[in-house]
Length: 92
Length: 92
Image 1: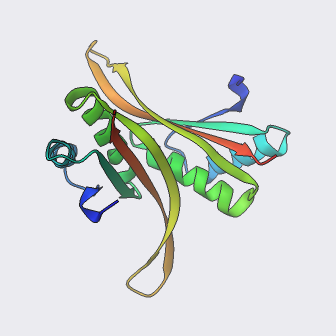
Image 2: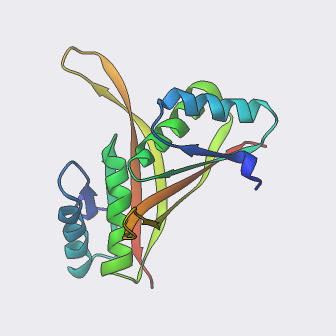
């Protein structure tokens, strides 16, 4: 999967990310990966649900992975943060 | 799956839910389902990651489902909220 197909979910309004995914899909992509960490994880799930329920009904959640990432803070201390990857794919 | 094997994730501290899952597993359950809605979704992922990385290393995330649930508010208005179900299962 190329980097182009990844949408990173942060703290912007949900609809910004929904628009990004819809644009990708309408531009010819068959799949998009949503990536999020920490509190943005819930927003990633919102994005996936809104896209498939309201905008592109012929996509499925193909796979969901969760993991733990280590973040190095300003003072060099390591913190663990949970992460999620949601793979959205068009039906064939 | 019986209701006993479900741990509902809400707004309490993460370690409360981690303890609930570990207790279930040590009490003989082979699987536990974590359920969460809205902002608690990120916490559910935290719980799954902490349990499998720090407490019970022989469990896997067997399946993750996301969905949309309709909640009826005080004034009778319907709101959509995202939900997640994470199935944790012991290796055989």
